[in-house]
Image (tube, rainbow, N blue to C red; front, side):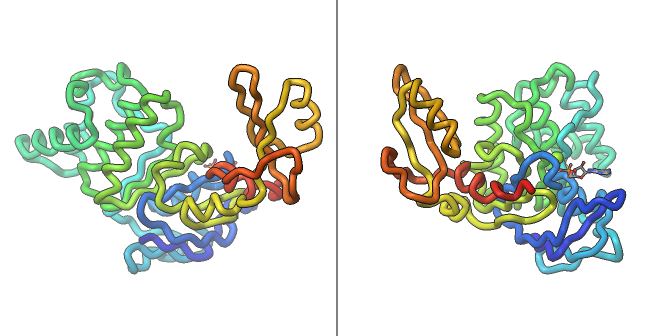
Length: 288
Ligand SMILES: Nc1ncnc2c1ncn2[C@@H]1O[C@H](COP(=O)(O)OP(=O)(O)O)[C@@H](O)[C@H]1O
Ligand SMILES: [Mg+2]
């Protein structure tokens, strides 16, 4: 468990994080719009940047020393734009990283590299150059190189950004598997990306925590507020002009419009909220 208490961080006199307190565990989804402070927070946790004040304990041990978080070998951080050595193969890249991480024995290094390649399901692709790999594959190499150091906490910044749908689904499965023996923190500005993955979520906006709880609890934030209209094209304009529309779906001639409303919508039916509804309920009204 990673406990953050009242973390504050300013950059160039602008508050980036304000009194951030969170308890991260399991597969933890850190969500929030762009600029919320997710990357900043992840870099603080991974001891890459300083903080102004606040506490950070990991499995009960205090890690803040002055304005810095102490280096912690248990944490593996994957930045959003991970890319190493574009012109050598994935296997060579991993071999090189293993050497940098101190695995000097050649045979031991080969075993380690093979093991992490298997762990992230890169078998059959290890001889491709980094530059030739798809975004999803490259992310896997990024994770594989982290696993060489045997971290117990994995911190992934926007890992699904730029992946196509198939890669996303595969990636999700990989994270689920890694979640069995690692604590994982994933950030995303897309709620759907963490929907079926996270056991706990935190919502950050403009550097402040707006919510923390289970996905079911986040959904419940919108319970009773989500209504669905069946509409014709003509009615759609009318609804969009007068209601807070959260989603429109179209099937042949049938249009369904989901709206937020805190009072009964007589022409609509009340529907159970989804995670995105809970998220929107939490972040809306925080724009000022
Ligand atoms: N080095 C920096 N100097 C000044 N402001 C920064 C710096 N890095 C990030 N910021 C600002 O901090 C805020 C949060 O950024 P970031 O942590 O990247 O958010 P997120 O990852 O949620 O999109 C943004 O407003 C961004 O412009
Ligand atoms: Mg970011």
